[in-house]
Length: 564
Image 1 (cartoon, helix red, strand yellow):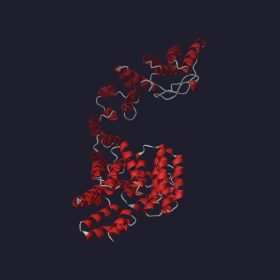
Image 2: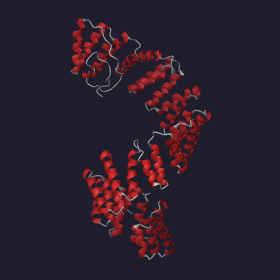
Image 3: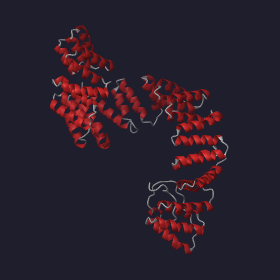
Image 4: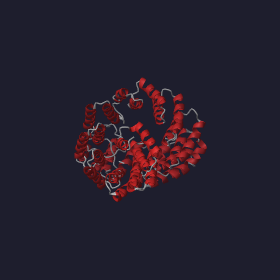
């Protein structure tokens, strides 16, 4: 069955003609306002040389002149320009000289301290980097974290894991294993992907401050990065039990349960969150999604409607209400709601659903026009809209028009296996088997592991020819790739029937139906049961199938042939 350099800097202000400067490649410090510099007349020539050199991208000359000007005038703005030019020239030695001058003028400027630390690390001047980091930390010693976490974040930005770790260890050791230092060490290890170390460094912090939200969340994140999701969930559940009114912890726990696929438990947590924050739209929306996932349609509808009625701007609210309307077979309501989805990640899906539902109402011309507009406005949707349009035409038995749509799509995407496969199925439906086989074989040239194409070709050979050995080769390969597919199992069962292996045929087709009820597979089962003398069961199978899929061509043909 069918970067310029490791030292690239952006935003250091030049004193003039900024609009003519080339656009820098990376931002290490933010642009600063231009500061007027009190240059005497003798300095103007050097300044003009530096400025013109910058415009001409002769950064070595610019850096040299800016640095000399900064030294003569003790001017931070000129020192910044010297740093920028030196880094654009890849001259780390002159950049360091300019930064050290900058810090002589303004010793506690954190931008300069951060930059000089990076350059010291690049030059392997670890002791100098340590001195500057301790200076940075001391300047923030009265803040939360005592400056250690701030230093850790600066070190993460250097992307030099070993040197950064060594420096953080030295800072912590110099402060007698301070708990804030231990937390920063754990944070640094986590950011560098050293999860075991991050977990180990956090242990003393957990013992001292185990009920602090930041510590709990860091432990949870570490466990998740270590792929210990169950342990993370248990750890966070325990924390939530200790802090029943902590919204952030409970919210994180609910999200963790969603990620683990534990939807019933997640919904319970979101319901508790809704009690804590009844006006929180994100909580209500998440509850609606989970209710929908759990097939609790009434509850989902109530939650999405509450958001809709109070004017939520979330475009996914009308989208999900439209999905519910479809479930309730309210096509007009679904169309109205889908038309209100004017943005967001589900916008294109909403537009496609509008086309499909419009076709279901019998207006295939409007449906095609809708898809055409979508295809024109969003070229990236060309393949998907063509597949949808072709499928609508097939459902309407407009086979030649469906083929024309696929032909047109293949002009722009001649190697697209999705379109080729869709067209091949139309050829099979209309018994143009030579063209069907040509398309399927073209797919297998492009993708030898295309399970659906292998299965389709194998089924065709088993059903319409006597090339059974060839059919078996293709279907067996499809089974290897997609052995849980009811279509592939049915194909293999039907091949066994054609070979006269009735017991094996029944076994495979029963397995297929156990996975998914399908009229054509039921038709195959009924025919095999009839041939093997199990006619009472055959009648029951075929009649039950007719209640669900009476329009299926294969089922109708089998029942007519058997006089049922």
